[in-house]
Length: 171
Image 1 (cartoon, rainbow, N blue to C red):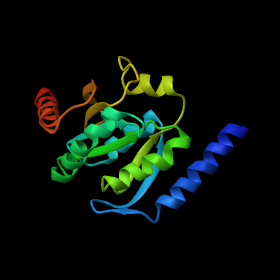
Image 2: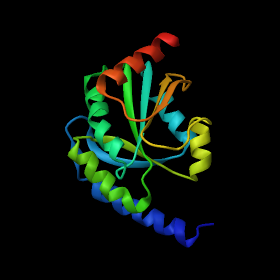
Image 3: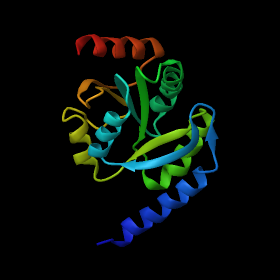
Image 4: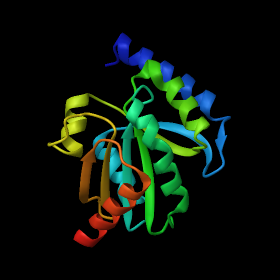
């Protein structure tokens, strides 16, 4: 049964998605922000058809997220998509989605970006029970959806490359 809050969220999300449909990014087509539960995110990881999938959890209001985000965009563009895919998951609240969309456009991100859907606690625990919920946070998965690495906090491009390579070697 839909309540007033979920109906409002659905309306706001639909408006954001319709607005975003006209906006493209140079790296992967039209920008779409898609709600995703933790379980659906793991299905997206498995469907990515890449050896490794790097998932960056961020928010438009998070200064360290905004600072590191260009490093992930660069890594996404420089990686072979059959080898490594990068997915972005915003944990923004529904009222912040227009800011998230603007930030993505400013960084030249197109294609599908995900927004956390559902209650925060179960989402966090499903991604990693040790996750405090702080962002930025990053997870590295293999093609079967097994988590190989996870960290909280901002990274540089070189740290990102090193951590992904370490996760690959540990698998």
